[in-house]
Amino acid sequence: MDSIWIEGGKRLEGKIPISGAKNAVLTLIPCALLTEEKLTLSNLPRLADVDSFSHLMNELGVGTAFAGKKGGRTNRAITLDASHIDSTVAPYELVRKMRASILVLGPMLARMGESTVSLPGGCAIGDRPIELHLRALEAMGAEIELAEGYVKAIAPGGKLPGGEYTFPVVSVGATENAVMAATLCTGTTHLLNAAREPEIVDLCNCLVAMGAKIDGIGTSHLSITGVEALHGADYAVMPDRIEAGSYACAAGITGGSIELVGARASDMLATTNALAAAGLLTEFTDEGIKVSATGKLRPLAISTAPYPGFATDMQAQFMAMMTLADGDSYMEETIFENRYMHVPELRRMGAEIETRGRSAIVRGVEGLTGAKVMATDLRASMSLVLAGLAAKGETEVLRVYHLDRGYERLEEKLAGVGATIERRSGG
Ligand code: UD1
Image (cartoon, rainbow, N blue to C red; front, side, top):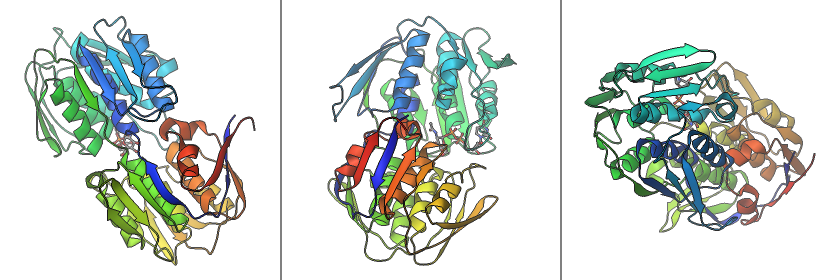
């Protein structure tokens, strides 16, 4: 298995290009199921999750063609052709690899009148149920059956009428499934307490480009009036705000200065506010956002929350940075119950962190030391890379497949700003 090897202690300086957003592309790809025409997504990140989703689409009979040089850096694209759908079943073997596979449920149901998806099962960062996805579709007229580890959704009469649903908790994935399904309903759907993450705005904008009628984009009340059919579109995936935030933390933890080229500041104000509170200078430039250390890092108090709050997907990276702050930081994880899996590994590198339930206290230390570490999810793995960049000596981050799911050309991007980092095979 590959690992990422880092010789820490280098101040990072330069520019890092920000890729298309993983969490946006994973909801844009299934939009192709809503139309017989072709959907082309550009600014496509090169990620293992994109390949997994593409395989799932192939399994359903959807054609996928990639454009842009293999190993190429810019504007890679995928064209999805769902003119024929051969199967309405997303099998366990593919769904278990990637939880976001559940996002085929709504669009497939809306287009084909039925959809069967394996239940995704648990996940390293918590229980992650899908009942809200199912309740929202039921409110729109779907009949749902659970059997043998699969969820089967049916639209009686072939089309969903649409309806009203208030999410009891904000769910990104459930909002996405419901919005996609609503575009082809015979009536109007109202989704209340909907998630309003920038990736949901990206989804809505793509659907509108495909002919959908959506009001309230960017708010927690989405009104979707169903149309007879959607058409094809060319759509550019938004920049990845979590990737950008992660590299901002790389600047912070190494006392460096990194310009995040292509990052969109308006999507990540909670992150830039937290960076500023930590004593980093954040400048909005013509190309993106420049983040520079100005001295010792200041401790923070952070609580994760749905957008526009502080993203749970940034918690682990900020925690890594706070291990070197000048004092005690307080963190609270309110979205997922088991998202401190990086803590024992950070401790092995010399960090002083105490957790109690959903709270953590990070007591800033003078320095970290390199170690062999591994994490069980994507953002936790990134926090270990960040710690390794600042640590004295060598760090080896195992289980690189987590990083490959969500960070395009990680080692190349970090080496480009002065890190001593490489991928090693075997181990
Ligand atoms: C998405 C993101 C993930 C991010 C998360 C929260 C993708 C591919 N993934 O995940 O990176 O960390 O949003 O910003 O976009 N919940 C329920 N019942 C449900 C669904 C969710 O109780 O049916 C709960 C979850 O357990 C969690 C909370 O709602 O506590 C938020 O989860 P949700 O927003 O649905 O996360 P995902 O869409 O899975």
